[in-house]
Image (cartoon, rainbow, N blue to C red; front, top):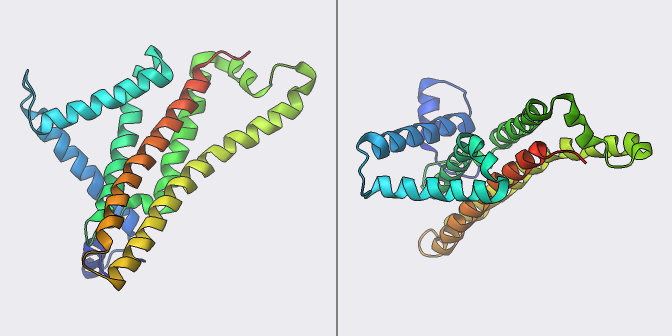
Length: 224
């Protein structure tokens, strides 16, 4: 563990529970998102302001990216992609608060997110095309179909591995570097690292969400 002190870890030790930091802090992120969503939608106004304005900007940004990546059909999957984006972003950002641990710095959390994308991709593909979805794995040349099928299966299995490790490596690596600087110079030097952490948090959220959209868009396409 890179953090010298974690609030929820201390509470877990007092209560003698062993849920794991990635679980307790994932629950915290979910609670934050529920509370913020409730406050933002509690009194919706025609001319938004404050929290409503922020949430509308986020929703509009995700919706625009969905339409640009997946077309009009992508709007159906807005709840899924928006949930991924908001959960990952908040999980990444709480790493900048002393005593808090980002769930995305744990491979278990990232694997769960990546496997959800993997399952949803193929569920959407079979729902849209039926068994004709298997043509996506066959390639355009009939006599090469057995070889292409094996290559495609390996490629699709590698997707959740890639999604998990990319997010885990960036967030866990940033945690280690930040804690090293905090230990060496606990005042001014960590500030640039924290600013870089904000940039990393947004970039990794964008990359994961964009790849999820690309995988879903690929499953919706007609096989040639």
